[in-house]
Image 1 (cartoon, rainbow, N blue to C red):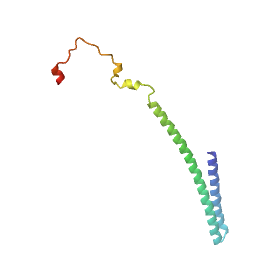
Image 2: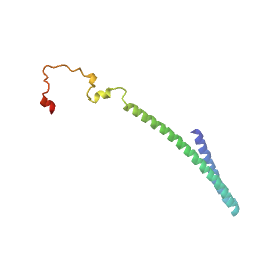
Image 3: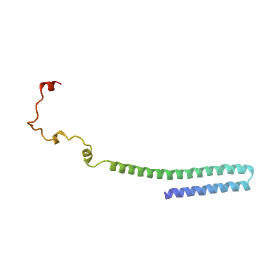
Image 4: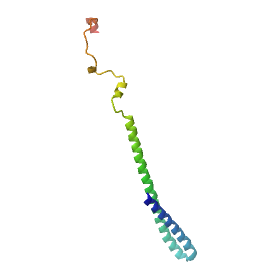
Length: 121
């Protein structure tokens, strides 16, 4: 990022130099010389603006990449917090126990077998 700041500062200096060139040209030259000088200074100015813009874009891209990484990390943390690490969630659902967890059926003397009428309905 220090390198990008240095490039941005260099571009700013180039912009100031180009502007100074415009001012100097307007005070000392003939019309044709002024037009030629303006064209040359315009090219320098355009290059400086482009270079400065590129430095700013790189700064923004670097910061966006950093923010994207931070967001990704936060999302991963949130997912980790939301994901249970054991089976306590199943116990909280009030589901019926698995058949193998139930006691085996026993013969109860009080239970009467169904009659044929009940079985037919």
